[in-house]
Length: 347
Image (cartoon, rainbow, N blue to C red; front, side):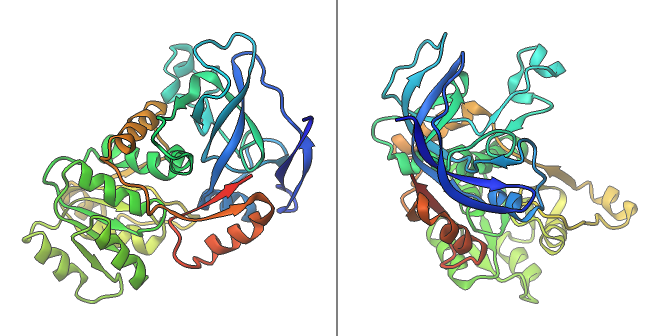
């Protein structure tokens, strides 16, 4: 096979199509992956509408939450075999910054994002660096493995690394969609208690309770602060996660923190936020932390948690669509049709 089907986005006209393109060839240290599944993420929509700037070619293949099997090895690749079930990292270190010079690739200062700086996996095949691969255990379905590369690993990084959630800490999650749902599950896994969800959608609130939240509130509820005070026995929140990224969600979450509480911003938009008067902010000792992405090693941890039954992702896949219907999948996510956690593309 010399050609394959792939989605191609023109970042100048913001139009895309599924078309035939050459199958890429893996270079030294790279592998060719036959894509099994690839998620549709809100950041993909942000590149289409222009709110997230393009980082690479004018025309690019999107999709950065992928799983598949190795189809070919590039020169110099060792430790991997054709047929291995893998998840590629959704980014590549620049290999030129100070961190990369120290081989500290996880803290690369100019990380190149898959599907933004180079071609992604809304395609039959994609190329990945061998050192960024994670082996998928045989008992982990490849559709669940695909979302480990962002929809689950980014929440993991937010909960475990940036938020540093500890056993018994109270946690609030604003927005329980694809990212927030997994923040709830992972916060429960590390021992947070209680966990509260704040979401506009009644069905999403009900779902969050089924997946591990202790209470769920409508952010428009005038009794929200009193409700959180009640469920936390007056302590308010130790850690709040804003998985939406709007001015309203960020500032409401900040207001629900206890003294010296931590707000972790995970959702992103072009909206601006305020910390209020410096006197009040400093006196309360609250912390505001931005979060993006994960460490490659996190994917292996999550794969093991799924494999051993500690983390249940069976409800995380809302729908699987063929590549030719990618436009419909994008529309459904944009319109929140059915309140999806993750819609997957199957090339």
